[in-house]
Image 1 (tube, rainbow, N blue to C red):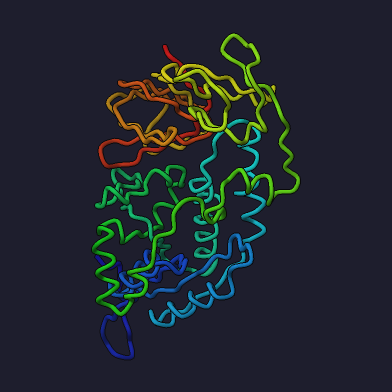
Image 2 (image 1 turned 180 degrees about the horizontal axis):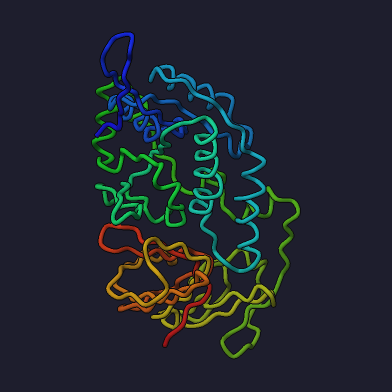
Length: 369
């Protein structure tokens, strides 16, 4: 579907197409490049924007690649330097969460506070009709509410990371890749002269870590972060060992904790006391989750049943049915039909109604009720 309108040209005496303009976030990878290509093929007036985020000395050659890709796409591209904003926003959040004993989700935090914020602001300032990204999701309006919808390719669906987008941001967003599988996008790239991009390995993990262990990043890259040694205690508060800093651990972790009894792992992180609590792994099953800073689309405060929940646990991504109780202060209580193992404070818990992303919030406490 192409979003074009028409205007009357008095000189030619007829109606002519007025192309809708779209600002596409271009990273230099396959997905963002094919987003620009598909939108151009649909008749949009496409401009690329490339955000400089966290450099770590890499990027003259990378920015040159972006320019070459946009040249091949025959679209203009602008570069927006957001490195300081990124450091002060995303990386500061990343450090603070670990120092408080929580497990951050920098990708979803970055999406709303950096990527969509500056993409949306730039588009507003320069009168673009739409913004677009290379996410494998779809956008749908229902009963005057805008939703993120899961993408066709379930293995690539990225809706989990977009739970905190605003209605204005979603309404202005185009995501053409949501109607394709990754295999189809690679084939489209090959057919349109982008074979090198089609065979390029996917970037995985947190972008600014670039494969580095996050613990080393915290200790080496951020000089002001100085973890201190503390106690490891059992559930009776008896000291059984020492740890090198709470940032090294997440709920459910066994590795690096020391000589634990069989089947034991980290069950609590008491950052304010600089303590780790360890206990049996099966004590980490919970049926009730408490969330704050919720962003929910189309739901008034109240209780809703038969929703679907997605939780990012320790190496797991369990899903199942739940009920949601939402209050007027953007807090929520989720009651799970099946217990979740090792849900991590600080991680988003995301709610769906069938294929539609309803919203989510940050987990701050897990209980059994």
